[in-house]
Every structure is written in C-alpha cells, then in structure tokens.
Amino acid sequence: MMQMSIAGFTIYKGFLNKSACEALVGELRDVVRDAPFFAPVTPRGKPMSVRMTAAGDFGWITDRSGYRYSRTHPSGTAWPPVPEAVLDIWRDVSGSDRLPESCLINYYGEGARMGLHQDKDEAGFVWPVVSVSLGDDGLFRMGGTERGGKTQSIWLESGDVVVMGGAARLAYHGVDRIRYGSSSLLENGGRLNLTLRVVT
Ligand code: SIN
Ligand code: MN
Image (tube, rainbow, N blue to C red):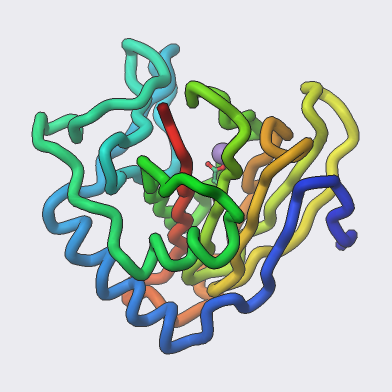
C-alpha cells in the first residue's frame, strides 16, 4: 500500500472514534427510515453493486435517464435533512464557506465496489468533496484528472474522513473492494460511505 500524495487530497485517519461512528450510524438509521436505500442502475441500465440514498437539498441519483442531482428520492419524497453531526464534520475539515447541499449515502454489502469515476455533476468545483467511511474497510483507489493515468490505493477504515479539494477535486477515484466483516459497526456488516458536496 502506498501513501497518497496528490495535492488537495487529505485523509484524516480515525477522525471519528468508535463511539462517534456508532452515534452517526444511529442518525443515519433515521435518515434511511425516511429515504430507504434503492438499487441504482447506470444510464446504460447496468445495476450498480452499491445501494444508495441521500440527505440534504439534493441527492445524486442514476437511472436510465442519466446521472444527475434530484430534489427527491425515487419514491417522490424530499430527502431528509443532513444530520447536524455530519455537517459538523464538514465544518471541521472542508475549509469551505458554504455548507454541503448533498450527502450521498452509499452502502457496500459483500462484493460491492465502485468503479473509477470523477465527481463532476456539480455546478462548480471550488468546494471540496468530503467523504466519511463507516464500517468495513474499503480499498480506495485514486488517480489523476485523466482517465487511464497512474493510480494509488489506500485502505479506508471506519472513522476515516477524506477531503478532495484543489487539484484532487476532479481526480478519478473508486473503491476496488471491501473487507466484508472486518468491522462490527453495522449490524449486518458492510461499509457506509457519506459523500458531502456543494451542488449549486
Ligand atoms: C464515491 O466516490 O462515490 C464513493 C467513495 C467511497 O466509497 O469511499
Ligand atoms: Mn465519487
């Protein structure tokens, strides 16, 4: 495993301790009660292996109509608000004058992964992406801003917080695999990732 050395990429290892992770999962349970996980498909109709939901003014969704931000859950209801504890993480690490308008919640069950991609559906890229890992370890891969460039990998553990700003804001990234069962944080195992973004 290599250390990440890309300008604008910061990893706060163990930013949240075990009890903070547990408290956060409790808050997310309430979010998921109002906005249940759904099974996304790519615009080409390929099922993704993660389960997805969101909180905030906007959720990022994908289906046959494309990748986009939506003010509503696929069921048609507004997304629940972003929990205050999640906003606190953003306030602590983002260095941003704006609050995130979207908190994407991805759940990785056994075998789930996320292909290399850029986060580029937002109106501007001056605000960073902040991501929070909870539960099982995930092997995070990150490259540069060109597809097919050199990549580096690092295991993200429960409580780790990643900031992608500056040159790293539009870097390709993804999750190759998780170590299913490596954490006991989530009742049924797996990994949760929160992605916080300013959208408009
Ligand atoms: C994503 O970029 O969509 C997810 C990243 C992660 O799960 O760590
Ligand atoms: Mn992403």
